[in-house]
Length: 112
Image: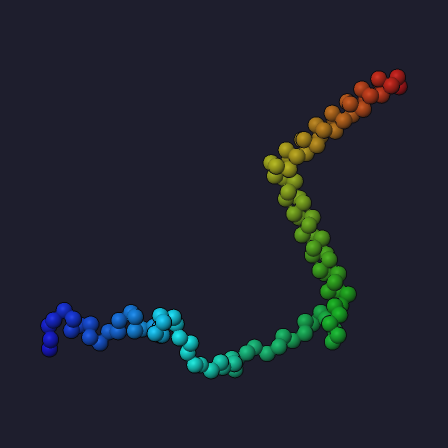
């Protein structure tokens, strides 16, 4: 057994020899075969809410519309209860009061 410091690294490859670099220092392409995945999933089966031509059933469309409507109603209700929504409502009310006051002022100036 050789106890020199270099003896432990004799079997290890240097970092330069681990990658495939050519004489110009660039990486050389490898010859490899591209293999298709033999376990590809089967094509998706038609959704039961569609007919053979891909047309959705009336019940499916109705359910989708009702779901979207319910979601939008819920989102609107949640948005009303936020501090930002209350602030916007207060700003709109203030603008409405200012608009009515201005309209009354214009009507008085016109003599009505």
